[in-house]
Length: 151
Length: 112
Image (tube, rainbow over all chains, first blue to last red; front, side, top):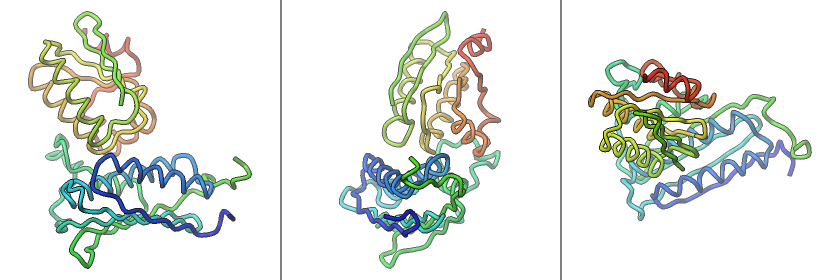
């Protein structure tokens, strides 16, 4: 397949933390397939893991009967990941800045911060069923992409 | 995540490798630090040379470990961060919280 052809994949996972490894494996394989490598892949995986972990823990409350939907799209030099849970949603404004000195030593609350640090764009919305949808895009550095033949 | 523990005089060195991530590595790291404190080891070095990834849960547990050790009058320092783990500590600004050292020798000297 030509490296510039758009790639689209979809996963439906039950809400178990061990399934984060499946989500990661799929992303790594897709990036490898189109020739993305290096730091971009590492930070994409980092953000994906956070979004998936949030969907499992906070959205679906680790109920294995609830599903996390993950959509991957790779187009030109952009990777877009969409993660949707079956939870009740949350108030984004209630999430404090974890770098604020008053919150720096909190043991939790850094997941969204991670996503925003490592992706070019992160947007939250509600699904028709009321769950949380996070869609995030990372624009890749051109030099991190090589054709499969070069590998 | 895998771990190895060794003591040098009164210093507990916890060597971690693999991923410190939600549901597995984060809990294990906390257990290792808690058991060290229960054994009376209050000077702790966490060697991260073999750690490939740490997610926000892993970072959170590391902060919790630091807080627990400090409250009990001990010291917890980090050793041998990879460039990416170092980046994460910088963006989260936790580099201002943790003492980070480049070698076991430096860590031991800092806890003398």
